[in-house]
Structures are given as structure tokens and as C-alpha cells.
Amino acid sequence: MKILITGICGFVGSETALQLREHSAAEDLQIVGIDNLSRNGSWRNRERLAARDMAVVHGDIRQATDLDAVGAVDWVIDAAANPSVLAGVDGRSSSRQLIDYNLLGTVNLLEYCKQHKCGFVLLSTGRVYSIPPLAALSVTPHKDAFCPDKGALPVGLTGQGISEQFSTTAPVSLYGATKLSSEQLALEYGLTFDFPVWINRCGVMAGAGQFGKADQGIFAFWLHSWKEQRSLRYIGFGGHGHQVRDCLHPRDLVPLLLKQCAEGNGDRSPVVNVSGGVKSAMSLAQLSHWCADRWGERDVAADTTPRPFDLPWVVLDSALAAEQWGWEPATSVQQVLTEIATFAESQSDWIGFSK
Image: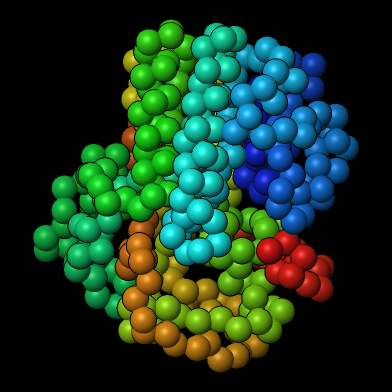
């Protein structure tokens, strides 16, 4: 089986590729990747991939002709995206750039799958879920972290998190809209042109070696910033840092991806949440306590100004993935944080190098 991984020199793409290699005999699985190498630190991951005999095409999925250099494959795993919920509205990237990369890039990949009759796996996001009911969620601080009040939870949300039944009605942010549109197009292409499609809505990805930008992973960003004595702020929600996210190491995706690529078309739901769930969920204040225990206390500034699209509690419920695929995360949040911290201690300026 030959698999193309897009964005292979990013954190998620490279970790997925390396773990796929670990889980499969080299003679049974061929991995090729494509990446535009636009992010600082991409060369580091390219070297790691090359050491495991994985070819990387220097190309851009926004250019359909760049995919011609890859040739035919059996499956595409799409890990390429601008991952920021503020993309297109924060002045750092334009709305057109976001749509070109996250949506039109997907169109090019789907046309590629149509041409080669190969399967498609989209790594999507929990940020496809509707913002207003999540922003209005009634929460109470407990042990420095928000907890949903169980009295009046919206449809699709339980104490275990946001399920696939939760609303995806706009607004979901421009970023969320590009991913949700990509999901819908992928399903339509698969049905129309008869190739398998699986969509995995991921929680916050986190792990050692993740690039040092908040929008690419708040867990790694917070730990690296703390260790490097960089300024940190609790933004919004009273400036207490009670907002909560779950986390998932990308290597935990690999058993699911292998099952999906072996399945082809089937009767399972094509869309599932994959995340660390409530067991991995932490607030920024709790992350600070963890950092203080490892590296010592420090001040974190408070900025009570609300920021667009920020939500008090975003935790995904992966019960459907467990039911249909027997999947559950294998890496605990404590293991993820320890691996990030150990890596941070081996670096002098990871934030500056990789941002």
C-alpha cells in the first residue's frame, strides 16, 4: 500500500508518517509526502523522514500540477492546513490565503483521488462545531478549570464532551468553515466518484517537537514559553485561565488510520471525533501549575478583553470512534506534557526558532 501524506513536514504530518512506519513492515507500506516547507523547522522534520526512507516532494497542494510529481497512490491522508481559528481575520494571513490553502487545496486533492481512484482521509477539527451554543455554555470554575453545568446542556453535548451530533451551523469561524466545507466536499466526491472517504475531527494536537506557535498547539506553546521565560497571558474569561481544551498526540491516530485504510468503503459512520477527551482536558491555569512544579513559579498576565472565537470549554467526545473502530487514545496527558517538557529542556530557543 502506498500512502500520500500532505503537510508531511509539519508536526502532525511528520509524526503520523513516522508512526505509520513503526506500525507497519517497511516492505508492506510505502509513504510519500508533499509539503511546501513554508514553516520554520520544516527542514528538521524532513531530515527525520529522510532517515526513515520516506520521500518528500517539495510542492504545494494549492497547485494541482504539483501533485503530478507524486504519481499514483492508494490513500491520501490530508494533514495540510492553516490550523489557526483566527486565520484570515487576525491580519497575519488573508482570508483568501486561508480559503486557498484549506479549501481549494482540498479540492485539488479530491480531484487527484478521483483521477487515481484512491481513498481519502481528512484530518479535520473540532472547530467545525457551532460557536454560539458553545460560547453561551453555562460553566462553573472547579479546581481552576471550567466545568459545564449539567442542568441545560445543548443537544450533542454531554459530560464527556461534544459529540458528532452537535450543531455545525454557522458561525464556526472562517477556519472552521473551510474545514467543514472540505468535509462536505470530500463526502460528495467519494459518493459521486466511488472512492472511500473518512473524516477524523481531531482535538488539540500536542507533543514534543511541535512548532512553537499558539495556533498550532496551545499545550506545547505554553510549556515552551514558560520554560523560556517568555511572556504569557490569560486572555478573556476574567483573565483567570480557566478555559479548557483536550489534547491528543498524533501517534495515537495511527491505529485508526490503518484500520480506515484497510476498510475502504463500509457501513461505519464516515465522520468521527478523535481526541483525548475529558481525561486529557486541562485549563491554562492547570497547565501553569504543571509548569510551576517543573520549572518554578512565574507571573502570568491577565487580559480580560474577549477575543473572537474563544470558547470556555472545548472537549470532544470520541465514543463513536470507540464504538465503531475500537479506537481510544493511548497517550495520557501527563505523558504528552512530560515529553514536551523534556524536549523543551533540550532546546534553547524553540519558540524563536520555529515560530
